Length: 234
Ligand code: URA
Image (cartoon, rainbow, N blue to C red; front, side):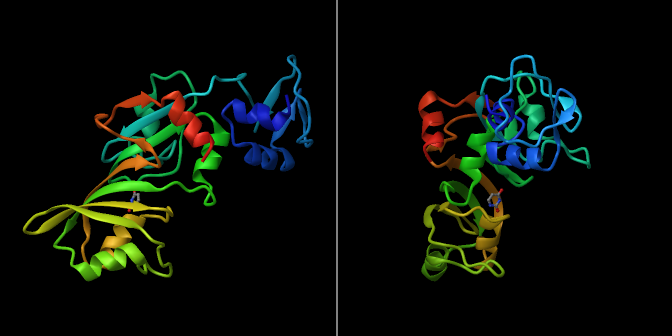
């Protein structure tokens, strides 16, 4: 098997990132730096990434986690906050979150050891619609709704069209469902702040057609084969 595929199936990186690792001299085969992306890995080869042996091939694992508040989506945190990996530590695979969710955002997060799927789903060209439920301060006028739907300036970037619908209007707050196509940092919070209705709480309820449903916070489930196929075709 080609070394870039081998590294991606071992959960190290996407095939493209594996090519970068190979070119930059981070990969050794049987103790010698291997710079040929086309190298065919043999059964008896010992492959190392930055000096650490690759522990053979892992079966691909695809999970949907309901990320709780106060948990970060990086694999490690220097401030010792809880990471999403701690919530899936009973799964015997080296999993990575697919994309990010803010520390204070809850909801749908895909976790996998399939580097190619991660690359596909997070690539701007394939970016799937992400749907959020946002509780925002105040009332959204028609003008504000139109701005959110048609594009709003979030500081040097005008968002593309979004689907926005009001679920419930209270006296001092509004529950809104919003689907966006891009994934700029803190985009939903910035969009509502830009129209003067700051977000009070935010939950991602769907990634494309992969829906959170009734999954409880802090729990995860396996993606169905149909969901995995859908993400692979996105
Ligand atoms: N938009 C945000 O503001 N926060 C998230 O976590 C995701 C999207």
